[in-house]
Amino acid sequence: MTDAEELRSRTRRLLAEHPPATTGRTDFLKARFDAGLAWVHYPVGLGGLDAPRALQAVVDAELAAADAPDNDPRRIGIGLGMAAPTLLAYGSEEVKSRFLRPLWVGEEVWCQLFSEPGAGSDLAALGTRAVRDGDEWVIDGQKVWTSSAHVARWAILIARTDPEAPKHRGITYFVCDMTDPGVEVRPLRQITGEAEFNEVFLTGVRIPDAHRLGEVGDGWRVAQTTLMNERVSIGGARIPREGGMIGKLATTWRERPELRTHDLHRRLLDLWVDAEVARLTGERLRQQLVAGQPGPEGSAMKLGFARLNQAISGLEVELLGDEGLLYGEWEMRRPELVDFTGRDAGYRYLRSKGNSIEGGTSEVLLNIVAERVLGLPPEPRNDKDVAWKDLAR
Image (cartoon, rainbow, N blue to C red; front, side, top):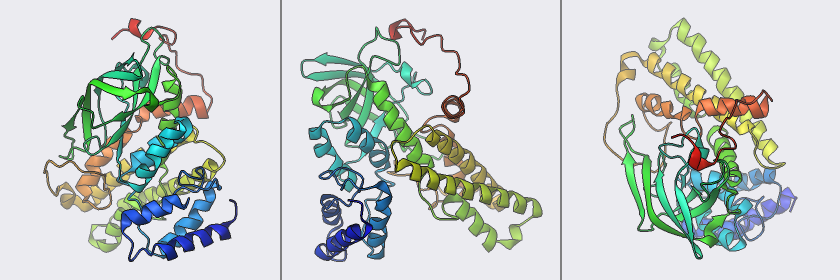
């Protein structure tokens, strides 16, 4: 499938057979998936048509013009941006058939069980154990900073299966059922007052071997697929010109002339240009993705995303003066998504502080860019060949 006109015809046929105005949202999304118009570059039968990724824009334009419902990608971003590419690359046919449709439709929310209290920036130091018991694995450990764990049905999980191996080996990748009685989710209240993050305790959680992705002990390689896609999904989201947080700042500038100063104007122009450069760089990165899997360039995009968000939100608070010190509410809530543009300036300022931590800290991403993009000498790693069980803790 390489023909744009054929894709338009298929999309119009979907709209004719399932009119958005009279078809339930979930029913329409299921029909779209079954027609291969969910993500057209995926295989036939898994929501796609084996078409070039670039042709997705043809489908999306037709559906947007018809006011068709989307799958609320902000709510299911972890599933779409991180779990799905990994399931596609490493899952069995049974796993892909079972999980991809309800994931894309939004019937099942996903979360990511990677970071631990002692393994955040140094993720390979993770200590959650997975011990084989026949056709199942028994998981014990703790995960932290888990977005959406409180609403998730499934999780992508990495755990240590061989403590005798060096830390980057002896890790295995699983799909974890968040409804297992051994899974306990506790909220982590953030600087915003809310708790979209969680800590997750795993006690005797049983995972069938059929829900393992990749080979035993090869989980670090599988996890790289997830992490590279994660950084692209965080830092490279498609937005229109003057969209996102720069749009909120520019709107305030235009509507509140009494707040303006020459210095603020100069700084706003600098950030506007930076935001536009980031947007165009993201477009270029997505075009590169058409040819294959994401590379370390996504780390640079995510690094820039964090810096830009923090700078924009800081200038917005400064522009508003005393008003910028106000904060809408401090109610303890457990939201399903992060809404930067639908909240006030105070929320944006506080929440953006987490952008340089989540999805890989800026310090780690600087190392990745230096070593894997710029080709600079790697940092010394004295523990590279030391068995995990012998590492100092």
